[in-house]
Length: 297
Image 1: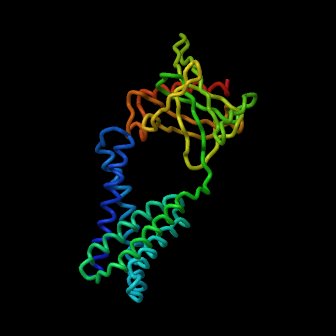
Image 2: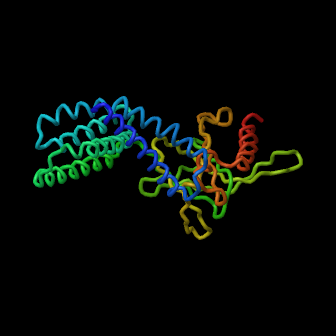
Image 3: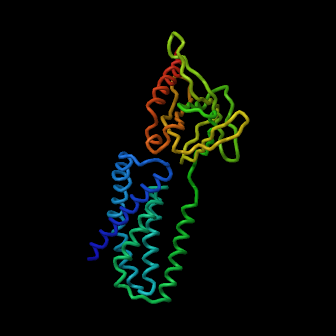
């Protein structure tokens, strides 16, 4: 019975995590969930959650039962502490993704408590004390998630007002200005540029920025704005931004790096965030082909 309850709790936690990802993803993207999104949730989110719950969560829960049952008066809070603290400890292996382990452990623990609710003797004082201690524990775990020790990109992109299409940013470019700073953020100011890609003068227009600054790496923490002629800014939803390739420019300029993005007002949504637009990708191919061939001429 005990193993069966663990399996049911693992399944409950996996389904809740998948459901929450689906709901929060649709709210954040403000768009319809596509069949591809369901596939991503099932194959990636729920699969990894299930692996964690069955390989790590069940043994931790068995350990929790063994320890907490020795102190019946404080069984609830001890069990909660073991489940959540072991989830936080996964930070050593999976870094920032440990937050998902914490939520998975929380739902696993709640599933366990619900299944055994009729077997627990209810005492008001103990219940109140355990409940207060449980919320104090949750608050402590939440505070841990706020500790920010990772490097972040911290870039602000200023895009010409109304522009849709490919964005090219070139870093470590000799003779160019360094990026401006706003507090702790690098400001990437984009302007309209063009590349001629046929001998009869056909040109493709795109947004570009060149800087002598390095391309920062780390956890993505970028913001995007349309910038008007008077400097006014309008925030762009992240569902309207697609991140493309990034890397070394190669023969164009030694040590230079590039970054490709796409911005839209037409195709905003989860699908655009992940895959971008075929129309903009054809534009990107023309830009990059002509831009990088300059270095070999």
